[in-house]
Length: 331
Image (cartoon, rainbow, N blue to C red):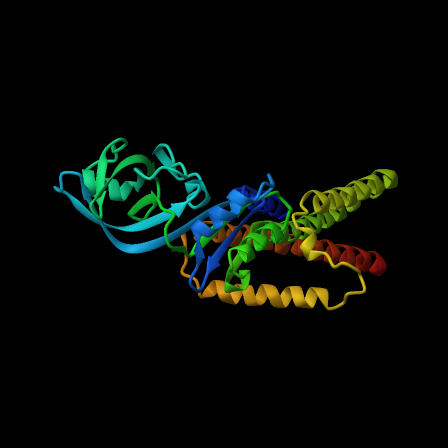
């Protein structure tokens, strides 16, 4: 069982690797009108700070009609309009070509299904499609399940925003930009991935602690005659647990109270996160969040399985010890 617990814990690290790559990133999903890209652009032009978070604004529209440049083949696709980096929305999904640059108004990207429906093949880089009487050249191909047509756009309001800043820096820089743009973070749902990563690491450390406890108990019983060796193993396990907590710390200063006498701090933080989660439920599912939350659920499931097996091993050791003591007394 200990071996199975170790494997499950290692599997949780493996399946959450995409979440780990979201260091310093956050997503804002607006439940109301959204945010104006031109206003964001003006803020970035006026600000001279180099540590401003890197932003990507985007929105989706179902039922967009595109066609081959000669009009011979058509497809109804999901239109994704963005101002920023495609990788912020579809990480590691580039199957060919190159992603769009922020200023590329003449290029587009297609998913494999959309490319096949319009051109009859996925060999589409450099070919042209027409959308609303405008011609776009295909720059890249995306490996996703949806039929997508992606283009850069800076007009109108955007429903989604991705922000990337310094890992552990918190959401304050993003909040400041939103407030300058006349938008409150409470108008949407904010997904701070450092916070989520921090919770995942805490659960992982808890699972690893139970596993270490079970392993130390097994080692102590097997080598109970070598007290110095047993104490060294115990000290090593404790040091490893503390190291995991320190190395896995992903929380920003915003989740640490200004003074330890502020007893209402964590209650207010929990209430804010609960309200934020309720707002998130009002927002339609999007590709990136579905993928990352699927990984999160799988990783938490592996950690829970590892913890359960570790607890079973602990109780088994306790039962065996009690039986041995009882058998000795009876003898």
